[in-house]
Image (cartoon, rainbow, N blue to C red; front, side, top):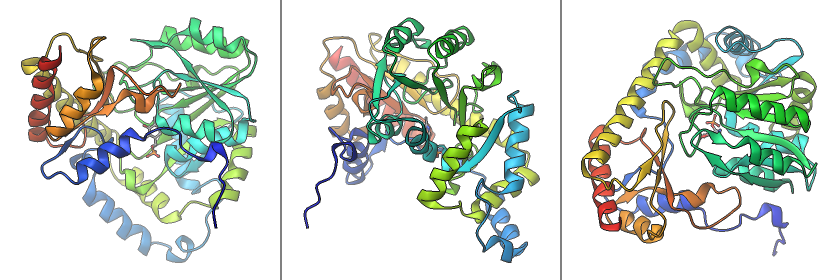
Length: 395
Ligand SMILES: Cc1ncc(COP(=O)(O)O)c(C=O)c1O
């Protein structure tokens, strides 16, 4: 039979991230700065193996039944305590739902809070799945201009004047794809606009604890006096992405509705993986584990940057990530960025064209996202030398 799928279910335009992945997979010796996978050496494999062993032998019959709708009780409590004590979030009026990574929340939130035609305000360049999830419900992703500090409040306010806004989607820490961290002043200004136009803030923070410096900018949720922030977090980048455990924390009424939708889609989360995470939090030094992840990423970013500085054109600009997994590289106007991308691919190095992340769907960009976490140090040196030398041929 031939299916006639509704427009919102059909991806528009090319999928650049998949293209880099698929083309690279067929090239021997290909070095990819395209995939946003955590570093293998930062995953505590032995601890995770021991945790699986422990949880399958401890109360197996409990584990092999359906679990609680909101997620494993002990893991919810551990997660909540961390949000309250380490991230200084409010407790009153809030609820916490465990989810299949922060990725699942990207779909659940717009499906719960948006109607067709509602506007969602997003950074001009942001996480592709977040943009697509908004489109999938017939809501409208609205591109808001950014500078080196993230979303520009004045531009947000202009857009919000339409009166059609539902929420603002932000990755305030070490943003994907740009690596930018939003300053506290910027966060406060955006919160004020949200308040004035009665918008939710969807704060997506899977990288927030992976910091290269001691400076921590308070989360939106930590100063959420009006209970309008939905905060998403994840154990993917600090423990293991394969476990697929994340969470959503926010207004109890909204979380309750999201939980019902989640239950209709996929039922309860597997208890096995939730208990593995929970066991790890009880038995390892989690802060030390996060510090290790940050150390590994910081070293990799440094190697990438030093290699570029040695061989690359000074006309290309880079953001300066102080945590997380990504950096944003921008070629001067007039440079043929498509040809540059193809040249990198021909030289067996994958970078992701910025258009992959464009909220307005534009197909060209002078920027590229590079992830420094997955390749080993030697591959980063080799791959970045190639990219850097090629920039000199272009500008
Ligand atoms: C901004 C952002 N949100 C959410 C996710 C999903 O993470 P996970 O589902 O692994 O927790 C990612 C992963 O790359 C991301 O970059």
